[in-house]
Length: 249
Image (tube, rainbow, N blue to C red; front, side, top):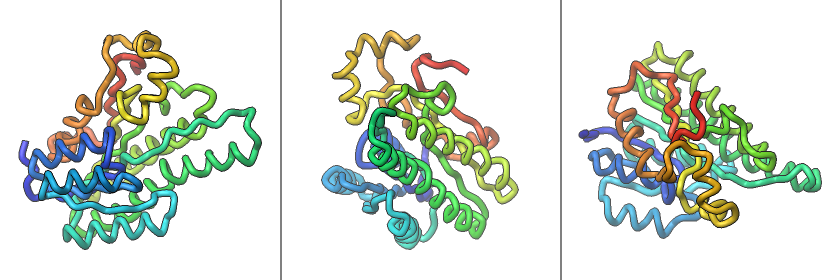
C-alpha cells in the first residue's frame, strides 16, 4: 500500500504500538510526525533510519505544549491528513490510596489520555475542515467495553471517553469529509506491559485469551495503514478490536 503524499502525526510514537504504527506508515511512504515526550533517543533513531519522518517533543499533560505540537507539525508538513492519537499512560491507583494521591493519578491520566486527545481533535477538525477532509485514528482499549480491574479506574474512564469522542467526531463531522476510527487493543506485548507480565505471569494472561499468544504492536499497526489509506472511509465510526479473543462484542 502506497501512502505517498500523506502527512500523518502519531502521538506516543517512540515506542510500543505508536512506534510500530509509525514504522508501518513510513514503509508505506507516508511522511510521519513522530511525537515523543521522554523517548528522545528512540525518536531520533527512527528519524535517522526513515528520512520521511520528523520528530516533535511535547508533554501531553500540558495543554500549551499540545497546541505547540500540532502547530509545529502542521508548519513542518504544510498540512496533516491523518492524526493517530496513540499516546497514553496506564498508571494504577488504589481506592485505599490517600485521596490526594488517587486524584493526582486520575488527573494525570485524564489529561494525557483524554484531554490532550480532545484538544488535538478540536485543532484537527478546524484544520481538516479548511483543507476538505482528514482522518482521526484513536487507540482505545477493550477497557472501554468490558471495564478494567479495580486499580485502573482512571485508565478505563479515559478510554471510554476517547471511544465516545471518536464516535461523535464520525457522526458529527462526516459532512466535512472527516473520518474517525477506534482501534481497541487488549493486552499487548509492549515495554509498558512487561511489568504486568512479570507480576502475573504470561500463562495467567494467556488464560484470558482465545488465541494462545500475546498480541504484538506489529499485529495492530497494519490496520492503521489501511485506515490512513482511505480504503476504510465508509467504516467511519467503527471500532476494530485487537484483543486475541479475550473480549468479543
